[in-house]
Image 1: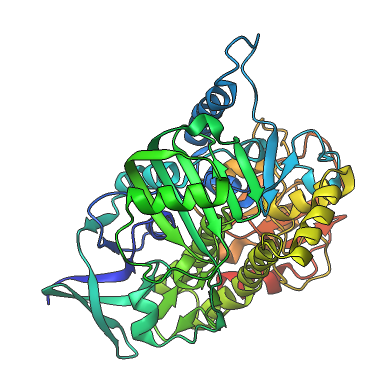
Image 2: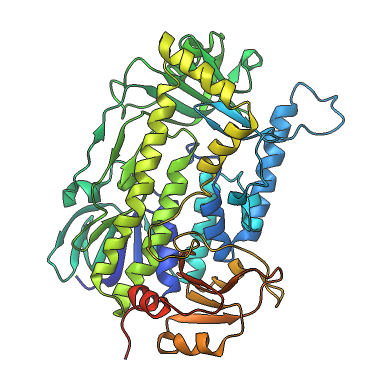
Length: 508
């Protein structure tokens, strides 16, 4: 055993790659191992929420996101225009998201609500596939010098309290920390013995990209029938089916064209014929979450820590949030300026958001069932979501703009994502996090404020600039993950030193 790393990450999906990039930005030596030889082509999440877009924007990746989102919009518009080629203009995607397949109209949401204020340009980007995010983060990881080894499977490990010895096929490596980002069937979670309570599944879902004939009989988008739910689009050949008669008999069996065809015919009543399968997956509504995200020197992130049905694409966003929250904290511990108990805040901050996502997906399944009571519930939800108030409430939730952490402190901004307003130097706040550092924004040109952060100068960067639209804020301390740790109005420094010590370690 002659290889040693600060951190080994199992899993090179979006969560593992995002975490690896965060660690490398902080100078951590990291190895990522992935059992798959290439990116899984299976259709998964097709969009990102505001916190995910903002996290990538803060790291300088907005141009790539904008380009990919534009490509997706064009692809979706072509699909929606198919059969209506005489339209004067391409048909724009008319929906912002959905609850259990009940669509939220783009024109219904009240974007003047204060929850949508100061979100910045990242909030305009949402149509980006999971594969695109994974490819983007793979390129960034390579630029940062992250070592990614594909076709390598973690088979065992031992945490001896001072480090982790990890078995990778026929080889063994040593790491200070191990993070399982290896999906819902995580081997890291199982070997470490994390408690994983939850509810058993009651449905069988299929998601695939196929070639088929007879598709003209399928409705575009989400359709509820007497036997389940199916989705056609938003790109040619993409199908999804939901049958609520129990979980699959063998979730690991190969998925055939005949199985997909039978499922789609059952829920749609349309005699389609599937002639080729390009990618396919089964899913269920199994919902479970670990009780803690860390055991000793082993941590979990993404689906390794929580599993649920894929409705609404919340899993990708939840996992990216885990990675951004954990990355800077683990780096601080590795570099020695933070105590290991800083990692306890990873569980306390992320577990409640994971629990909310599980409950959110459970509620959607309840609205998808085919019994009479559930049908009536769905009718009520459909009627409500056709109103401006309900559409706004639901979109605030699924967009992630309400996500915040309980960090204590009296200021209303503490625990919330940093607002992305414009500064007098021509920048926006979100543009100051590309290096992954914490930032103290001096918005009142206060020498006293700058002096107070002096002892932490190697860990916190100071930006002095006034807001283009002056408000009451005179200062904000923002963690590397983009969440406000301290804020003040009127020049007060009360609580600043305590916040600096809590999040960025003792000095002197």
